[in-house]
Length: 259
Image 1 (tube, rainbow, N blue to C red):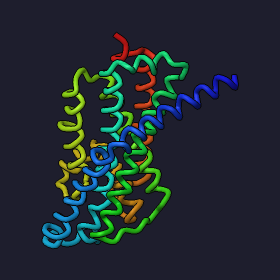
Image 2: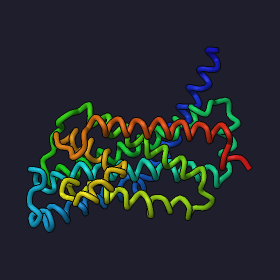
Image 3: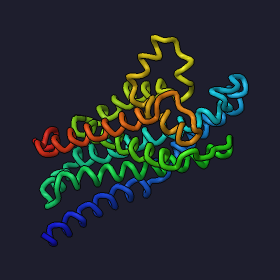
Image 4: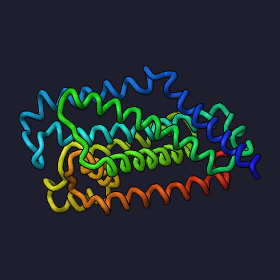
């Protein structure tokens, strides 16, 4: 039993180390571009559009959207890390080595998810540092802020895993981020308060899960949210649990993995 636990622990450490080394070794491709891209958002909104828009929900516009921009970077990078890494393992056909190794499906999934979470948090930290050059940010609730970042990066790491499993080519791993993830992010209250929307579009926005993540994170930083924070956290946790069950079932069945 002790030997089995040691084997599982070694397997987990190996996968996590591989994932972190993978994105940190090519930091000029994985860490630097997102930081530069988000810097352009801050430059645009703080110097050109922000002063024309004025305040939103009692905050300077750039201060209001800063948590949303940070969360957007966490979402996209957590997702892209896992989808590219796991699909690369499939494409290069060394995923079989992981599947036949004496490690459980839970360990395999956890290893990839932790890698995605580490990259998402690293990018979120870099973007937060960038944001401090353009606006004042303070943490209203450290517990909520950390919980939302951790849960959101976990959720989209799981989403990236699902995309990688069913992708047949490199084109397939770009379809979901381009046509689903990006629109949901931009329409998830990153750049505006949903309270400003007409009744119909407000109700439609409530079906966008990213809305809950952005607003919960905004509450953690600014103390303001358009959505009940308790409901938002429960929604995120529910999605995490559901996707974890689905991913583990896929690994158990070998769907999209074994030919």
